[in-house]
Image (cartoon, rainbow, N blue to C red; front, side, top):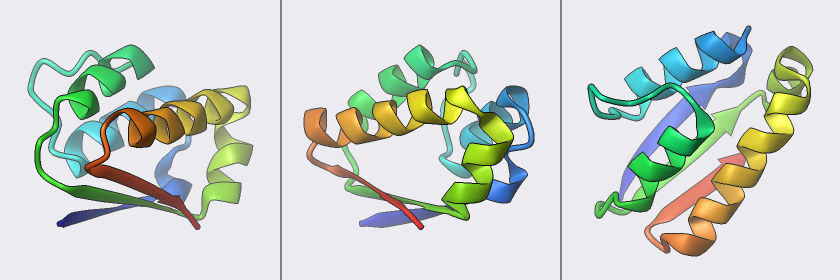
Length: 89
């Protein structure tokens, strides 16, 4: 299983979030930088993957309501693709 650790304090904006996701999760060059594109990338990932989001409470403060949408995508992708596990710390 490949483990990716994301630092929530780096999510200073929605744009910064998607830049970090692309880099840290090794998303494709064509990654669209939005939650639909994140879903598309993770839904077809065949490698067992654990994503650990550190400082989630800080990320929620930085991202506001967008953090709720991100959390929903991460939660639902784990139900859709059983090879993806997401933990918020």
